[in-house]
Length: 351
Image 1 (cartoon, rainbow, N blue to C red):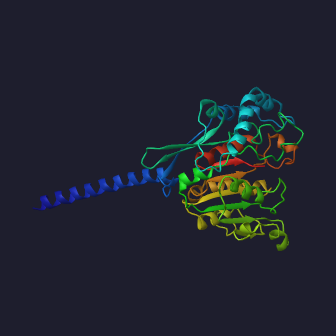
Image 2 (image 1 turned 90 degrees about the vertical axis):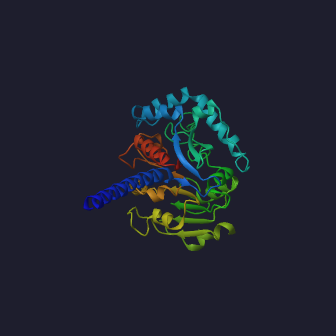
Image 3 (image 1 turned 180 degrees about the horizontal axis):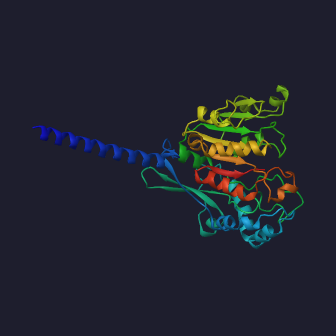
């Protein structure tokens, strides 16, 4: 009898251990799949992969040898000029795409030449039946407008933003659902119509309005002290009612109440469309914030589009407004933007 009872106890313990292991494996698998789960979308889309274009792959392998503090960035520009057909395809596709993005039925062009130039994020519906590929500008050159310096060094493209591919309203609806709330977190906001690299507040409001997105909430931080009237006088009414403007600096300490990722974790959900811009002209602080973000699995899973101007050496922008502000070089830029994109964030190199 004792042997029978002992055998039953052993069998029960083995069964419990088996189910605990099975549960652990299932939970881990589910978490790894749903870290960027957009399950509130119409089909429950899951971020699956970031796929770099052939052109981006070539630059990622070469950038360490190409990067230089040469004012003319001679070696890098030679490579860009060899790939001039890709450069002009990028510029042409940007403008042709922009005119169509507000159409909710907009469909991306997919052909081999497009995939040769543009990288993309790939999403899969939770039932596995649909694959959605959304292109993004490639990480090539010194991560600015592809015509700048190498094709035109007059300054015309110094702060030109017409190279970054945003998502369309239809793509956002397909991924997140038609009733997704939209947030803009502008870190280094300046004023509505002015900023060191050109106005960012008005650019984001107008750029996303053009693709059918009206921000429900806007959170802005700016260290330079401005009179409240100066901050708010130029805001259109629909922006004013959405605006939360903090005329203070941010803090990269993970638990600081001034850390912007805390705001994102507190205020947004996976069902929201979240855009972040980071440009406070404090390289050390920006890099700390980016590294903190890369170690924050919750915030990583909430941000959809991320704009950041990373000031480094090895980049001709040192001679066109930046100066030398960092011991890092452009190799680190490629690594950090690549890691952000690998987590499912559409990371853009800002101006």
